[in-house]
Image 1 (spheres, rainbow, N blue to C red):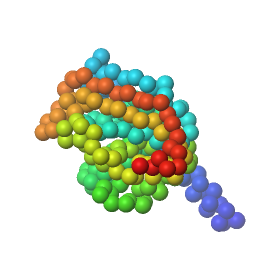
Image 2: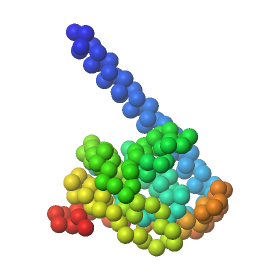
Image 3: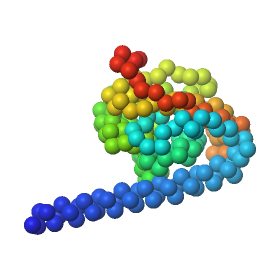
Image 4: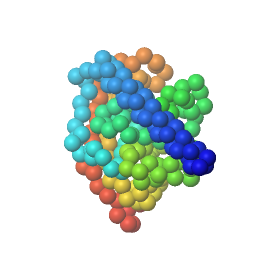
Length: 202
């Protein structure tokens, strides 16, 4: 009986933690949406949100040109179960807890990070959405960089639907060397979802 009681207590604790994380994510997402309206306003152009499934395992695959891309994309996606794959360096500073509150999980770049791959596959298998940047880092000049193989592997193994995302103009919101955001013409386009077939990993 004591073991059963301990299991029930742990289950309740885990449920409470998950609920708390969901509430925190909703709050942070709302804050980002307000900041987007203040900073960008009518300079933000979004298309294709109707292509984003509202439930079920979903892999969002985006290019990466600006610092604001992850919070911007995450705030626009009409789901509160979105998780982000972010470089491990982001979790080593004082802002690590903030990244975790945004549902981010670490990936070691330039390596086959099996823990990160398992985490992504687990989340997708549980019906959540995962956002990744196949280029591995921001493009230094806005030109699309070669993709790492991880995105194809995750899409193929998870059998989750994939939504391609294209962003341009966001590199001008917080240019390299600046800290204060400024208004710029930013475009975010969500493509039609699709499934990756065998043999399409590359």
